[in-house]
Amino acid sequence: MSANPLAPPRLRFPADASALTARIWPASATRTDDGELAIGGITAPDLVARFGSPLYVVDEHDVQARAARVRTAFTDAFARIGTRAHVYYAAKAFLTTQVAAWMTAAGLRLDVCTAGELAVALAGGADPALLGFHGNDKSDAEIARAVEVGLGTVVLDSHEEIGRVARAAADAGTVQRVRIRINSGVHASTHEYLATAREDQKFGIPLSEAVDAAAAVRAEPSLAFVGLHSHIGSQIFDESGFREAARRLMDVHAELVASGPVPELNLGGGWGIDYTEADEAFAPEDVAEALANIVAEACTERGIPVPEIAVEPGRYIVGPAGVTLYRVGTIKPVTLETDDGSSATRTYVSVDGGMSDNARPALYGADYTARLARASEAPAVLTRVVGKHCESGDIVVNDEYLPGDVHRGDLLAVAATGAYCWSLASNYNHVGRPPVVAVADGTARILVRGESIDDLLARDTGVVAG
Image: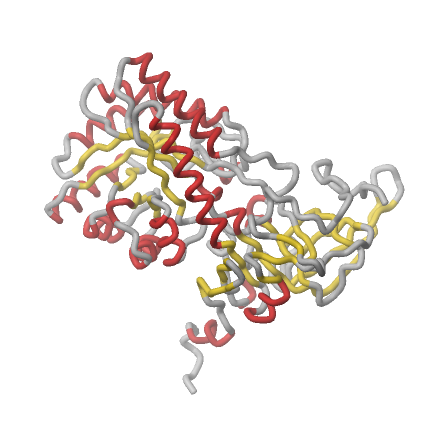
């Protein structure tokens, strides 16, 4: 067998269509002696038999290990240049009360951006003083709640928020710590919707207005200016963007130091993870060392003290630790004419979920890796894994080689779904959102229960109670 001409250049024809590439799958993912996929010591068939499908599965130890690794990497790198580093977990990637507890136990802070995320973080035992509140359109109620609970820092996203947060803090009789989110103008190498520092978009204050914004903050008795914040995007593999954003921020940071204290600098994050073999993710140690060197050099050149540093690694901590399990349904080979006038076949493999449990392929054209839960030596065929929803764009994995004996009833696993899958899930076509289970050491427990049809009907006020 050889590569299918319909396959994209990035997709290599596999020697073994059942192999698990370690950097893509959770740390505990393995094949049993019988060839079954197991995560956290439990096989995929056993998980689906107990919890049903589709099913989000999270390797608990992998999440915790990743959190600890990032914290150690940045603590060590910035201790070398004489300062401290704080790591914020991105609640928007995936948040439950138990995940909040894992992050707290690992010594991480949390970044929230809605009243709902704040409530879940607090319910999970997070210290409000170690939370940051983002968002381009915070409501007055959200700001008041953040101030009321003693939130660590509110990230100001616009000039008008300065006065609104100041009033809320004054009304509460407190002084609120704030950062200013700066639009650095760095064009990150990522999908347009994931780039958050370009000039023509909704986030932040332009770099040229940072000094005036800081002066306005400092003029408010109820606000304490902590420093600047930058976030250039998400799922980024080119480190040059991080380097340039850090340099630009340091220029303004130094200017602000001349007129008052600026104790911290938040350099953001958004590192990419390996969704496919074509991806090449950063090691957190390399990112930490590179940023520490930039900050140290910039401070030495400008003759200013090294600030405390905050970072937001985003999906790195939870993304690779997640897998989604599906049940295969309809198999449909589709033969197409190729550019050279010959023909080739792509096999459409339908599953019992889709864009309601993973919207990223439809939103961003995101690529994923899939494997059958059973091992197979059948020759690989080019497949497109699609969902059950009434949209032609309902694609789970656009291009993948799967064993040619894939059939109805098979279990299919999609890797690296720990981030932004459950968070973006919907009830499209009145499909209930799947449960999320954590696995570790041969045990599984529910983090979030799945939704039944009864749950969907319970919210419909036209349903007559029985």
